Amino acid sequence: MKLHSQKVKGGKAMAIPRILVVDDDMDMRQMMIQFLRQNGSIALPAANGAEVRAHIDGGRVDLVLLDVMLGDENGLKICQELRREQDVPIIMVSALSADNQRMEGYAVGADDYIAKPFNPELLLARVKAVLSRTRRTSSLVHRRNTKTFRFNGWTYDAKSSQVLSPDKIQVALSRRETALLQVLLANPHIPLTREEIATSLDVTGETQPANEASGRAIDVLVGRLRNKIEANPKDPQILKTERGVGYVFAIDVAVSDT
Image 1 (cartoon, rainbow, N blue to C red):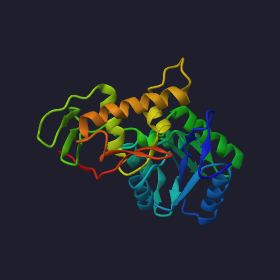
Image 2: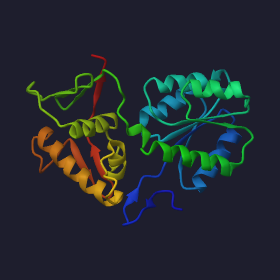
Image 3: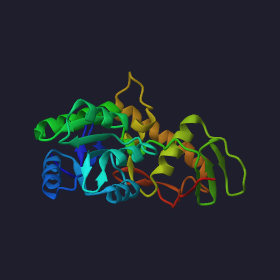
């Protein structure tokens, strides 16, 4: 399987899962990374909490494989901290496999728990199961908080879902348009496929082919949002088309707590 693209029916590109492998044992980390890459994932290394946060803040992460014991750090605490602001799936990996230790992992928000040593094929199966169960690219999910986002003179208040233009005029967005804006604001400068956006918004009807219907729905939705936030929707400067991929929110986003 190619590591830069995956194909689905109809020839449309789907995003490859980006998996963050967190382990302070370099040999174990490299083994897991190599195995995941050989099986069609983008695997990213991290050895401590700071590197985890750098990856999470710096780009899309679809799943975290998190070791419980990280030198002086505790993977359970890192998991708990991530859960305060992220919905990204987390699988704990640990040599500690007693029932109470597993329950500690689930208690802080882990989606699954795998005991070392493990069969790599089992690890892969559990990764696929968690990704399938979430049915979305998790880092696209808008963080449920009360933050304010500012971009190109515009303001979006996440608490009230109010959108203000640079002229301080409130602009009414539909529920779907607001949800799309939330996804984009959470991922500035990151090209997103139509499938990623559609899955995060769950716009596909059950009776429609997902790869076709969702793509058309996203194109229509993007057009509607452009008509409301772009000075010239025919020459968009904020929400641009990324050829061969999908769409990208092409400007900086400032985030504050007020």
